[in-house]
Image 1 (cartoon, protein in one colour):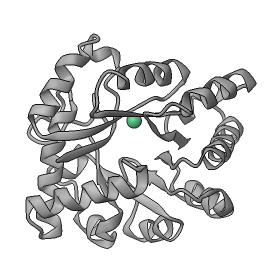
Image 2 (image 1 turned 60 degrees about the vertical axis):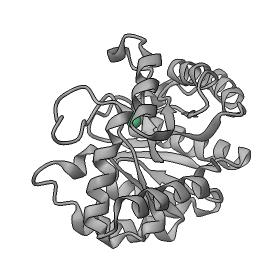
Image 3 (image 1 turned 45 degrees about the horizontal axis):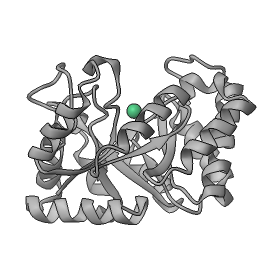
Image 4 (image 1 turned 120 degrees about the horizontal axis):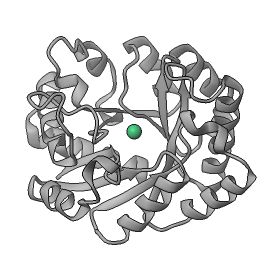
Length: 254
Ligand SMILES: [Zn+2]
């Protein structure tokens, strides 16, 4: 089966048509999708939707853009959501110094707090890192003691050298549509990472793979990402699917 470890299928761009999204990805052979929250409202939505479909799991967390909303009440609500049986990770969390929608202090507080919660609950966490490579790696290195259940660098866009650092900390890496773009120049990064640390995602509704670039993305299109990965790794499609399936089991317990 194919796996999409990071998608936002409750996004308003789909107009609530989740049934048809699930039908489409299941028909394409996608057997696992992790529908991802980025604040409390979206985390509650993905929790509710995941109860309806065997193939859908979810992650819940407060994105760095929303870091300023993580007060005590939010922490309590989030912790309750994370205890749901279909929840497989905390996230996405991290740093975003491109949009800077929350201050650096707010982002640091939210990142660390949520790492503590993930560790306490025995969950892996999902990292969003944009324009923050040096800060994210240093931050994780300094908090190594909180990393006991693995983590995912989602939509990995940093260097091959940096990947070694994350890998040594127990990190996994997921790649999406970006690796299929012409001039993506991601082959050396993918080759530098151990295959048993690689996962696939769509980040739907964003970042549709070639030849759909610029269009609305959905989880069925992870097929194009896996094919590209297989080409870069020099493995056949089935082998590549099997590796990703096994990595999903190891990191997320599904
Ligand atoms: Zn995302």
